[in-house]
Amino acid sequence: MEFCDLKKQYSFLKGKIDSRLEKVFEHGQFINGPEVKELEQKMAEYVGVKEAIGVSSGTDALLASLMASDIKQGDFVITTPFTFIASAETIAFLGAQPLFVDIDDKTYNLSVEKLKDFLENPFNPVNGEKILQEKIKGIIAVDLFGQAADYDEINKLAKKFNLFVIEDCAQAFGAEYNGKKACALGDISITSFFPAKPLGGYGDSGMIFTDNKEIANKIRKIRNHGQEKKYEHEIIGLNLRLDTIQAAVLLAKLEEFIKNEIEERIKLAELYNTNLRNLEEENKIILPHVRKFNKSVYAQYTIQAEKRDELKIFLEKKEIPTAIHYPIPLHLQKAFSYLKYKEGKFPVSEKTSTRIISLPLDAYKTEDEIGFVCESIKEFYKSNISIEE
Image (tube, rainbow, N blue to C red):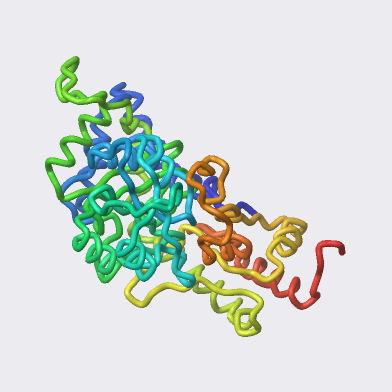
């Protein structure tokens, strides 16, 4: 069993993918080919925003968004300690300082209550001194595991404290929040098309979304060495362009993703929920919690589990792949040791990191495969197997 079966997906979509790629090879426009513009237009229409800008990865989408927001050395940007490092490392890369705020214990997204508390009394963990409000420039909120964070409250706080909001939707493209599409919930929103994402390419690629035309134009320059016209560099930029080949693959996948794959992911996640509910009632596991105003795309099907590490080894012996997202919260990573955060500072993130485990899920899993995973988990807890055994 594959954790995410891209080979099965390719087999199903082979005709569409091969046809799209063949056209690219025929016209030979491998940089800024017509497929890039076509994908941007379709993405903007699907999400419901005015502007979509293709870039080379989700990480580069964050970087370009921060650059377009004029983040520089000495600034502060708030984000979560429980996510992939890209959300915080792009802040640090620009010489700014990430400020971590703990997560909600049910959704694992940024806690709006803790965000409010921090904004009302912000301090620098390095020296303990109060941070001037004007030095805090924005918030990167992450839509973890497939569902959006609480943007009504986040945007309300951002407006009160004059902050921008970047929606890191790398794990939630296709999700919905209060009837609105994810990737349309921040001042700038980004997503990743890393191959294992709900909608993935065949390499690194990403997209930036905004309704702000001025910001969009600036990002288009940033992604192309700061130029609008060739060899006329108006600002400092980088090479962050979306490859035509990746755009072609995504175009081939997009229709099936919208029409069928999102609902298939939800159906299989609900099958997991049904089969594992008894274990939750026995306090052995905690199932994913999706807020009533959210529609999750289940980028991962992630549970909390008693004896997590033993369960992982047991499933591996049955050739069931799993993943741990994320074993070390960002504030405890060596890369951020200079921030002086101590263990115990963000207890929800730290506890979650010791209990979380993601199970196999993609739109092409069978009900029998999900059933086998569930029966294996039940077997583990029924047998009370330990690591020594």
